Structure formats: structure tokens, C-alpha cells
Image 1 (cartoon, rainbow, N blue to C red):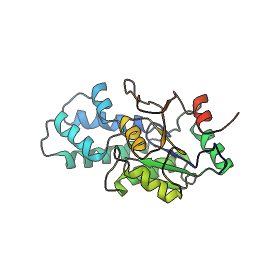
Image 2 (image 1 turned 120 degrees about the vertical axis):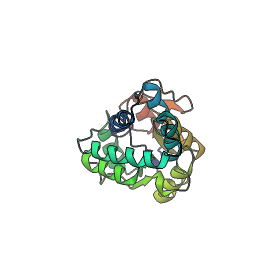
Image 3 (image 1 turned 45 degrees about the vertical axis):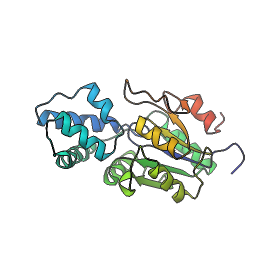
Image 4 (image 1 turned 90 degrees about the vertical axis):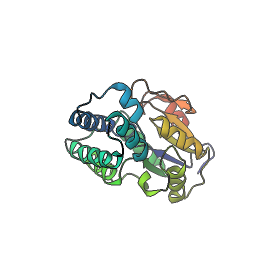
Length: 220
């Protein structure tokens, strides 16, 4: 790899690479309705990008189901997989960015807190299933985001040392925290209104923004 070029680039999935965060939102709304509760923007901000354990605790509290986190997560996962079959779109600039990285030969990975079956199906529906060198669900590690474990494991699989020369792209605070804890350079691109990513090294609005190309040494 030439000096100045990233050793690897690792993407989050939901709301960063693919517009699957909206799929999760519809499933979450359905879950809340089933339990007689209103799903609010505050609920969404609390759930975005979280692990199953954290999301389960939030759902348990918000839906007045003490001790029911495992059942609620199972119900939500079934709803979101069904909702996914209605289709999913790539986020603005995602396809073009990946194509440019692949043309240059940059190793690229994907790290998600979502279940692997959901991640793989969403990539398949969007036509992205063969574009990544590594696809990792946080369910494959002992500690999901915001712990660094998913990013550290992705770096090992990509054959690169975790550090500032590896760039992570994230849309949630837990994802930003995980990538920073792994020592990576982080570009934050919020997908949910009101969710701040101040801990990211760089901020953008879409994957097409100039700052993304600059950080990845993709010159126009």
C-alpha cells in the first residue's frame, strides 16, 4: 500500500452502507404497536446501532416487559427479517465508493451489530454480496459494538494492523466508540436525526462528501 493510502476501509451496514436503518425503524414501530406503545424519535435514538443486549434492555424498559429482553429481541428480529424482503436501497454514494476502493485494490470489510442472517440478506438484496473481503456480524465476537472486538477481528481477517491507517465509516455513537477503541480513524455520517457523532475524527453528511474522498485518498 502506498504511503498516505488507507491500509483498509471498514463499513458499518445499517444506515451507513444500506438504508436498512429504515427497515429496523419499521420493525421497531411494529413491535411497539404490538405491545400497545408509541414508538418515538427518542426511542429510535436510544436503539440505533446498539447491540442485542443493550437493545433488549431498552425494549424491556420501554415496553414494560421486565425479564423479557430475549423474547423481545427474538420478536424484533423476526419482524425485521420479514420487513427486509420488501427491498433495500444503497445509501447515497455507497456503490460508487466501494467500486473505487475495489478498483484501487484497497481491502474492504463490513462490521455490523445486526444478526449475520440479516446482514447477508440485505447485502444480497442490494447486490452487494460479493463486494467485501470480510463481512462480520458482532454476534461472532464476545463483545459487540461499542466494544472494539468487532473491528479488531475484522482487521485480523483483512490481514491489517488496527490503527489510524484503517478507516471506519459509522453512523451511530456505539459504532464510532467501537472503531475509536480499536484505534481506527473514524468518519461519522449520521443517519438518524438528533444522533450526534462528535467523537468521530471526521464528519460527513453522505458517502459522496468530499471529506470522505479526502480521508480515503480518492482523488477526483
